Image 1: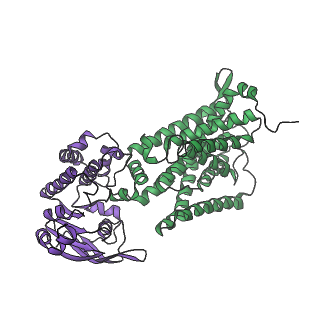
Image 2: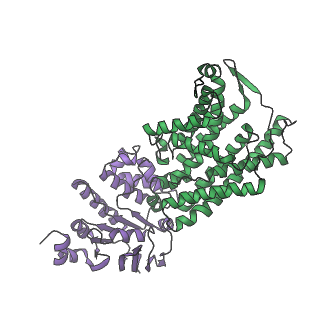
Image 3: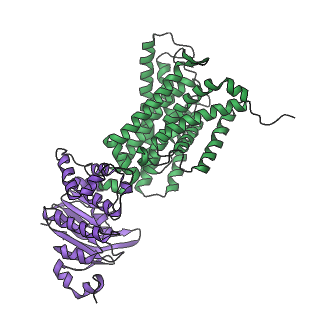
Length: 237
Length: 324
């Protein structure tokens, strides 16, 4: 049984159908990536998983339980944490307060101090910026903060929506290496990316999303070698 | 020929300190009501126009409680601690009544619209409608006249500044308003509910992703605003013993809303600053221009002038920036 299973979901914005009958599964400990062009439905998929959008049909199961009707704030408690597109940093809260928000839903508070240490170890930059307000950070720092904040809640699966978007190359490298590192420590990751090359080379498995439909799936290396994927997403003719 | 407007600087000079104290006293009441507008605006970007009725329902509860405890139009013949105990009871009932009203307003007028994803303008209309509904329910029940006056205690001067006597009620109201403001400010900065309120104010979707129950935050915010309006209601009855009538909330509500905008809507400290300033400005203006009718005119002229220069209010808007 997969940790997270998306079974034939469809999502509409008003009358416009954004997702058509999508199925994705994520096993415990995997990095699964979802690649696709702008407007293919990647963010829609992630927001529906996090409970920010309602499904028109299909279901989402997590640890074997149907969570399709569970409101977003309760999915966090179950262990699903989404780092949204655009990072969602609280601009007027300090770095420390943003991280603290990551523990909002935690009932078990005894490990919170340990989580701060762990996050500051992964992102020493955040420690330096601890008292600074979130809105004053650079894009790369905000992305670190967003991932760090998600980790503060000790999720079972980390959903990352375009973590490399708009970042300078050295930050992109660092963010991807952190993702691998966190995954190596046992975190399950579902990663949405436009940066298909980086994403596929780190993914156990991957799905290609085109105009709201899954058109291809396979292991990371398989899709990296797929000529159609190469042409459409890797910039190789 | 008579001038239609004249400035009586001498009168202002002669009454400066009493006008200041009185202005701050009313300002404290405006500030407490302004908090309700500001908190709800912070989390919903919505002006709850029914908040003036949330306030007046609290004032009715205060009057009814005190009347049933034997208070009336003459100074009560009771020891100070007995009066204090009675006022405390009236305060509790006032806060409860306002909080329950705020809760009902949220449930009836806003929540169903939110669930349906209604556009912003619809909330505004619903808010105004709710305001009228409550006003005329009160009218239907109590009629057009104010409730009989309720005198709480023999108001005595406590000390004097440059020949102006400072009365007990002013000290009580101004210090209570400041204390409440500090408590609310700290509550929003430090408590878990306060963090939730700030998170929803800054980014509602991300707040949900942190596990914040947005609906619960919204309801809590309305209730918090209601509790503070109940405190304001007690002080209002203290200052204006025969001011409790069905329309009584309206002008005070508009003033409080103005105070919130003047200070920076969505900003807790702005509500205090805006309230006190508005109280002062109105009082100075009315003495300078020679009649109480000028009070509101001066307040709104100043509001417009300030907003032309600083549209976001003196301290800037947004609950999130409350720490700035």
